[in-house]
Length: 288
Length: 211
Image (cartoon, rainbow over all chains, first blue to last red; front, side, top):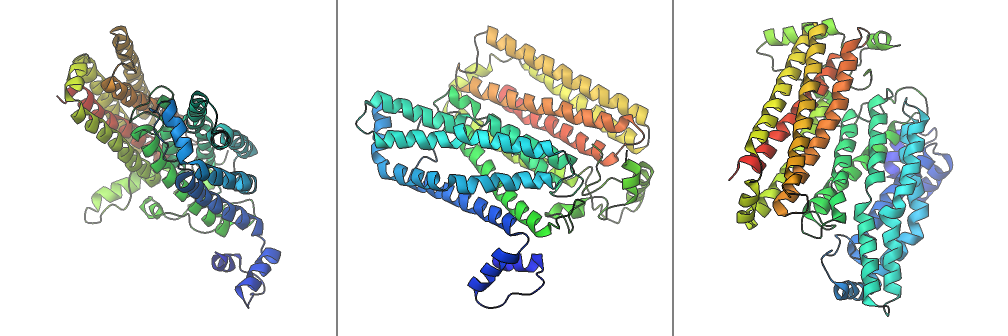
């Protein structure tokens, strides 16, 4: 990534020498160093999330909601070390990585021509939603793994709490997506293409369908169900990949001004539009 | 909601002319889609998403064919047909709205936009009437697998119709004042509305018709 940084920032003196030397130079002189730090924090977080949740703790894809107390206790026994190591990683890095991640997304809204309240609402909602939507699962699974001698009925209760809170509390995330969507649709600074606003809507609509996980334990609408989890997770994966790439493009285009971001909007759709060139007469026509 | 960013809208008269030119130059393939191309990306994505819901429904239908057939008999085909006719009518009126707006007849365009909203409202009321009827018959979300899918598919579509009212609100807002009237936004809104109608047709076919 340091190569891309070198190209886009156009430093006054081109750094030469070893990669370490160039890296130090960028840390000291690159005007976008905070933005790149936040972007790398985001990439690192999502990678660690996959390693911790999917590979180590086996908390994703979620185990079956249809097990009994013995089955739940058995799950904790089988995944004892995975849960401890996986969740330990999350506890270590969450503050360092999640705060810049959310800050970068809020920054994208501050760079738009819309009210600051969009960015602040998004920050508040994402700070809040991470608690039931992720941290509670981490804490509860760790408790279960650290107390293997407890009554299986109690372990069963922890099992339900962990996975219901993780899958079943998408409501606040959903509103965050909608806030981002409205900001992009209203924005005149061309920070993101409009199709990303609509992708936000599609993502929010799949987060609605996790609600039946509170009622059902079956293969479609349960917390590990085809519709409530699998389709939802595929959409979320696409959405996350897309916004990571779009935020990278945003940092590359950032000029620290207040007007429209320079450079073409990312994505292949622009050439399908009726007029490729922005018509300056519109500004006068549509100005209030 | 004036759209300056990205693929901006051209003034109406220019839009009108450009449409006319494109139809005249038949040898030149049209390089653009109606409305924002971005909305068409959404259309494709939502279609894929709903296709996955339909595939899940069909998989579980083949596994439990008898139950699905029996439960399906509790649905009133007439309400389903009525829903479909109402939504197709709303598609017709939103298409007339776009046509009128292209030709600069904004009064007629507004009338058709309101007609679309009216049809949408009729759809919502008839859908709620149907839900109430089913619940009174004892068929709720938790009754069996068929009704899980029935309530899921109809309510996620219902939600899309509700968002459609916001979209049609933007269309009406655009058509209302001569200072706005972005043809691109009108066509973008119409594209969304058509999508919601089009998604209903397979839902209707799968839930009510397929035996």
